[in-house]
Image 1 (cartoon, helix red, strand yellow):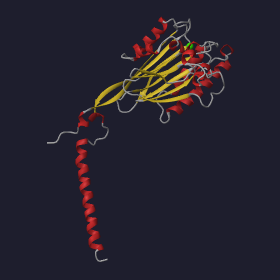
Image 2 (spheres, helix red, strand yellow):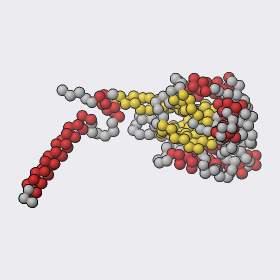
Image 3 (cartoon, rainbow, N blue to C red):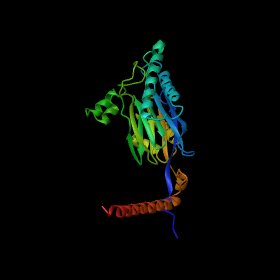
Image 4 (cartoon, rainbow, N blue to C red):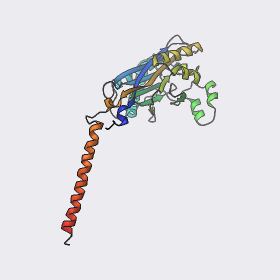
Length: 311
Ligand code: CA
């Protein structure tokens, strides 16, 4: 006689995360970039997917021991997040960046050959549909949604600040000889400025792609190259294609791409419902509660009529 409510039969869409990192010396003898895409723990009920820590760090080429600086910065984040912390992920990333800055700075102080070394550090914590991006330097994070590519981070460079102030165009900045001059970096000063790292909170939709990359990659790629590499294939193939394209375009720098995908997965809605109470059991329960409530109101009215009438 009664059909089940439609919502019970329709599958529910959830996200599964996948991520991959590729780094290559590409146009140089040594690779001062480092990268990671680490699964750091399980979120929610079993089968709901893993959390991820994504990292790109680009050791400063103009300084000695840039490869040491990027490695120390990355290791500090990996040690800080063996699992996803509870609470404010942006705050947890800010604290980890302070430790990374101190670790790189102190290593530079301790070893004259490494004095003045520094690194960019762009990272993301992914938890279900939530992505928290932290950023210092001129590595970048991009979001691909549908076929729209958006740069999430703003470079900490002289020319990026001039673009933001409207003094030069983004196109002119791409060819500006000062484009590698950084305004903020990890490890060159004892303390990180309080406004750093820049934090960006994103909510991922099914099909979204998140890309973290170094300047050796984005300098030689057009937005269309990134779109093509990110669309319609899994993160390992996307990351590989991005780095290979940068090499084909003749990048003269190290090239790094970290790609994460929010993959839509469909699970039956009945299986996704948490509590033991089923939809079919809930409806009669509510009806009984309503009947009891009506009876109580009637009794109350009778009491008022009977007891209140003589007054
Ligand atoms: Ca670089």
